[in-house]
Length: 77
Image (cartoon, rainbow, N blue to C red; front, side):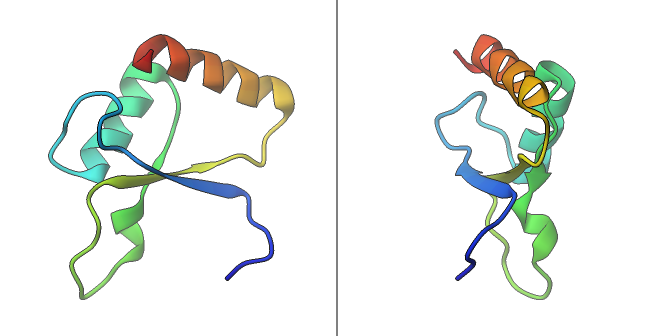
């Protein structure tokens, strides 16, 4: 357990298009919404990684986060 973090991990299922992997979903978010996400599978080695989670970093200024939220809301509804 962590006492604090600058990351938020979210499930991708049912939010946006159904894609084959978390890597494809993160790439889609970056290209289509202009918001970068980290595929959680990037943190796994030697085991079956999850394919339905991405991670967002939120150690940004409020105006940057507000703009990202607006772009996500416009793209994902």
